[in-house]
Length: 238
Image 1 (cartoon, rainbow, N blue to C red):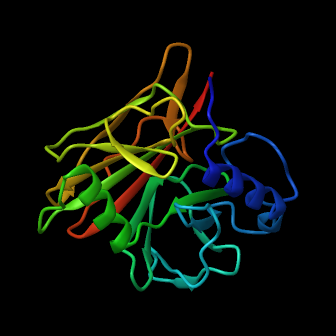
Image 2: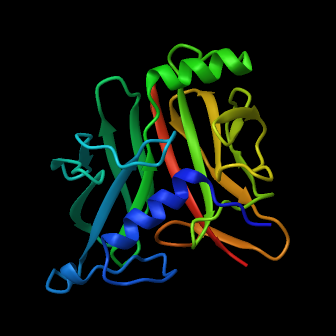
Image 3: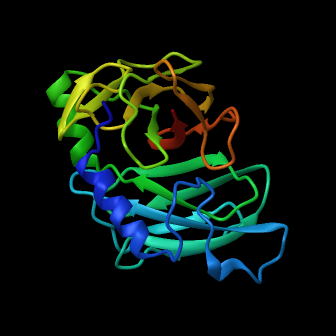
């Protein structure tokens, strides 16, 4: 059974109100980009509060080009970036851990939904699970959802380097594991990763296929930085 978490539902509603096109195309076409260079795409980053799914205003988002924008009242901001290859967006806000959003760019405009974990949230998780964050390490979050933003229950995430005990979420409660649980959110978090690159793989349940978002195919190896959360997203179809 597919489970729609509270924050993904809100995110879906927000993204629908910001677009003239409804559908499950993971490219996220945007009519405002019709007159742009064919070698670029419009990338909209929407930053959400992981507790209630509302957009976070005032988050600084820096593209790999060096251009920095600030999210609006819906938690969104947009950039023109080169098509093909990979993209990186750095997210910063007071009280939050620095985040890096990463993925294959593809050739179509897209909207990327990102969570922003605060230092206090991570401290609460670590205390609840008994898994403290080690110094000089980073975290990686794999978001695993269907095109309609339902969590892919039964999907298992893994990475190619050593890490601490992975965890996921059921409602607002963290629980140890590397598989999206029934009634859980479509995220798996890997803590205590040494800085460097790592592979990220998702094994979906039977009858489901997943690909790196938004460009498709295998997920390129994302970087992990000290005291950062790296976020990658997989979109799945049955």
